[in-house]
Amino acid sequence: MPSTLSLCWLALAAPALALPSHGGPGKDQTGIKPIKKIQLGPRPYWLVDQMEDSPLKTKLQSCSEKEMRPSRWSIGHRGGGTLQFPEETEASIIAGTRMGAGINECDVTFTSDQQLICRHSQCDLHTTTNILTIPSLAAKCTVPFTPYNATTKKSATAKCCTSDFTLEELTQTKGLCAKMDSSDSKATTPEAYKGGVASYRTTLYSGPGTCHKLLTVKEYIAIVDALGLDFTPELKTPEVKMPFGSANYTQEAFAQQLIDEFKLAKINPKRVWPQSFLYDDVLYWLRAEPKFGKQAVLLDESGDAPSTISTATASLTKYAKDGVKIVAPPLQYLVSTVTGKDGTVKVVASEYAKQAKKLGLKVISWSLERSGWLADSTKGGYYYSTIANATAARGEGVVFELLDVLASREVGAIGVFSDWSATVSYYANCFGLFP
Ligand SMILES: *[C@@H]1O[C@H](CO)[C@@H](O)[C@H](O)[C@H]1NC(C)=O
Ligand SMILES: *[C@@H]1O[C@H](CO)[C@@H](O)[C@H](O)[C@H]1NC(C)=O
Ligand SMILES: *[C@@H]1O[C@H](CO)[C@@H](O)[C@H](O)[C@H]1NC(C)=O
Image (cartoon, rainbow, N blue to C red; front, top):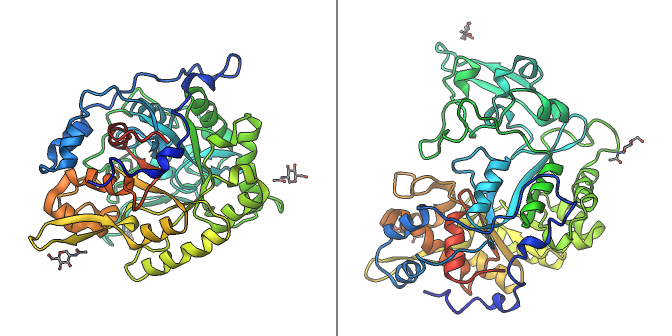
C-alpha cells in the first residue's frame, strides 16, 4: 500500500479550503451558503465492503466514522452528482459539494449570440435536455428529430447545438429542463427519445414537477463562488466552424471570453483551473493570461488506442518544454497491471504516469464513477481498459486500488474527477489529501 506516507507534494499543499471567506457580504446573489457538513452517503462504504482483504481495505475501513471535509483532490465532473442528477446543473454541483468535492466543473460552450453556457458538448441538447419535446425550439435544431424506422432499422436521430439558439432561448424558455444524458435509438416520438437511461443511473431527481435549468457560465461562477469552492471550467472544442457568427469571434476570442467571465466576477485566478483538449487554447492562456495559464489543464486523449499510448507518453516532453504545468489524461493512461507468480493481479503506475512525474508535470485524471459495473462483461469499459484483468478478478472494490495508485508517489495525482464525488472524497479524507 504505497500511499500513506508517500505524498511528497502534500508537504507543499495549500491550506484546506477556506470555506466561508469567499462569498462575502453583498457579493453573493445566489442565496447559496457554503456547505460545511459533508455527507458521503452509503456508496463509498459499500465499495469498501466489496474489496478483498488487504492492508488498503483495513485502512479504508478505519476511516468509516471520520468527520469528512471538502477536498480539492475530489473534483466534481459535470457537477459531481452526475451519476444520479442531470449534469451541468446547480443540483449536480450541490450534490457533488455535499459529497466533499472541492473543485467543481462546468463545460463551457457558446450560444448563437456568442454567450457562454454550461453543457458537456456544444451539440448534446437533444440527449441532455427535453428540447425535442418543445416544438418552437426543436424546429431550430441543426438536425431535427427523425424517428426510428422499423423497415430500414435506422436509429432515431437528432442534433441540437447550443449555437442553434440564443442564450435567452436556452435559459428563459418555459419547460426547457436538463435531464439525465440518454437517448433511445428505437424511439418513434421525441418523448420516447428521452429514454434509454443506463440502468445504473436514474431519473429519480428529474421527474415530473421538477425542472433543472440550464446554467449560464455567469450563474455557474456565482454558485461555486458562493459555495467557496474552486472552479474548473472546460473550454469545449467547438462543433461549428470558427470564427463563428462574426469575423472576430475566433477560437482565441472564445478562450479569452471564458477568462474574462472570471475577471468580471473578480475571482482570484488561484481558484480557477481552466481546461481544454486543444493544445492551442492552453498555449494561448499561458501567453495571454499567465495567472490563469499557470493552472491551465491540458486534457489528453491522444493515447486511447494501445498503438498510440507510447506517442502520447512521448508528447509529454514537448508539453513540459512549452510551459504546460498540468496534464489530464483519462484514468486508464495512468495505470496498468502486473500478474504475480501466484496469479494475483496488481494495479501499478503506467509508463505515462512515470514519465509525467519525471518531467515535473502535475496530473489530474478523469473520470471515476462513469463506468457502471466493473465486474460485468465490460470490466469497467474505457476507463478501466488497462486494468481490466484486475476488475475481472475483483470487481467493484478495484476502484479504491485505482485511487490508491493515483495517489501514490509514482503518480502523485493532484485531483480526480468523479460523477459521484463521495468515493474520491472518502479516499482523500482517509489519506489526508487536502491539496
Ligand atoms: C422508412 O424508410 C423507408 C425507406 O427509406 C421509407 O420508405 C419509409 O417511409 C420510412 N418509414 C417511416 C415511418 O418513416
Ligand atoms: C467583435 O466586434 C463587435 C463589433 O465591433 C464587438 O461588439 C464585439 O465585442 C467584438 N467581439 C469580440 C469577441 O471581440
Ligand atoms: C491479463 O490476463 C491475461 C490472461 O491471464 C494475460 O495473458 C495478460 O497478459 C494480462 N494482461 C495484463 C495487462 O496484465
